Image (cartoon, rainbow, N blue to C red; front, side, top):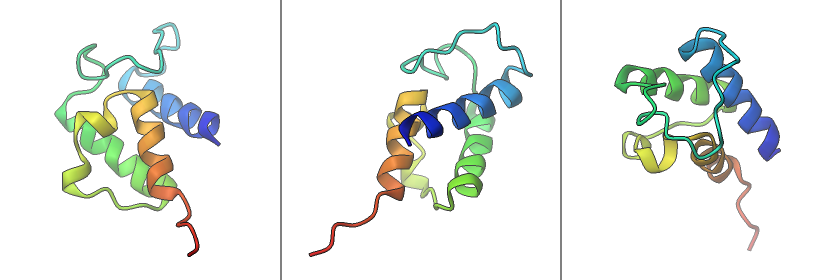
Length: 88
């Protein structure tokens, strides 16, 4: 599932922020902000994509680089929000 999430987010980023340019290499830990791929407005577009695609709500407090600044961080964030709670 991790690869599926990462691949979907990567495809969204390439299509919406790199305008389909697949020659731009994006590694899992590349900072979207530091590399200039996504700006503050782009973060809001990314949040909307995550909410629509994965049926989760991203709280304002969750919109931080620790959650949304790379493929690896976004994948981990989505997995944490979609993980089933452990039954007691």
